[in-house]
Length: 515
Length: 49
Image (tube, rainbow over all chains, first blue to last red):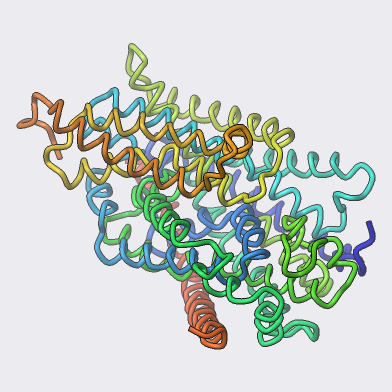
């Protein structure tokens, strides 16, 4: 299908991307010489200062998949989607100012979040929390490679509509994952922090190049973008609770998801564990607040800019809005890449593509290491009959990183991209977060919380799996239950289980238990 | 709120949000490099001790 002008991606851009890949991978690989023990490998020796920890936190939470799911939703809902950016910003400021959950966790000098479950409750809670966390986390990563590869193939012009494009996508996906796995396996958290810093710099620069191109392009500009949206799609593009928009349940559910993710979603929440002190942990969340806004607001801007471009081009309209501009969007996952590859000039486009790859790699490395370490320390370790040596822990974590990398390649090839990628991410995250958030907050701040309540709550979160099969269930039952309703119900369900079981079955040795 | 009100609100939110991130990035880039050096030194010292 011909969609107008070809991509601006040229040889010079390819060189920029290649240089970026070589430098980052080399830095990550060289950092492995510093790894001597488990603390260095898994939490960077707890020696990350505020600027490095903040850069790493932003790099981890801003993945290429973040850019993709934000742009996909914003392509249909405009600035209403950016409500999530505001929520994310406010949550980060709140945690930074109050130290809620993150302060006590850092004081305990843990390596993983699940360790707290054994510290406060018992070993079974730690193993269950770790296993469910890893399951949800690895499922959550399932869409990362495909989303990333789709972006790369569209930006570079290896369009999915071209012959053999599916093979190109798979090859791109494989190459990127192999590079990330290589340096994460070798250097662990030291490599993750060093490469996250480089990636923070590159992705920030790349995204700002894209923003400047949007705001100063002759066919776009802020005024034209917002007025085109207002005229063609109305108030639902600005007000999330307007008629035809997201609605209040969606807003409340996402406020809960972002709060939960910041305190217990291991790859992000573990930044409170890598910080060199509690003060640095809190400062990290406070300083990262603008980054939390930017990671969703910038791709949303790209999406609404693309809508403005579509409104001016009949060929694009037929491809992206076949039922008219006020109708449902199609091929939304291609929108952001299409826009950037056409409005950013050659030379600068390489920086944007490198920024996107930086976002892809920084998130993957943190997630891979985090979930592999959870499997090693919180599932295998407590279940093993003998204590696991530090060297064995490191090697098992490396094995876990490779295994998750292989899973991503397989899952990424055959799993069909859902209509709303964000809903998939939120639902898979909820499988763990709904139970773990309740257990974490209850354990830290409620003296009557018990192991039975913790186990019940963690198991209760598994009901969110229903959300993955929502469309099939809706077809069978004829009742359309939105994914946010399922997600929100999971949190309420877990809280009820936690309180009821804690009161019904209290712990026996409460007096001597550390809090 | 009218649609013009919403447009104005989002304009301000974007100006403040992107502006504050730009300032953060400019400050964080050099300080982050310093923190990387300090972290590598700290890990090396720990290894020796």
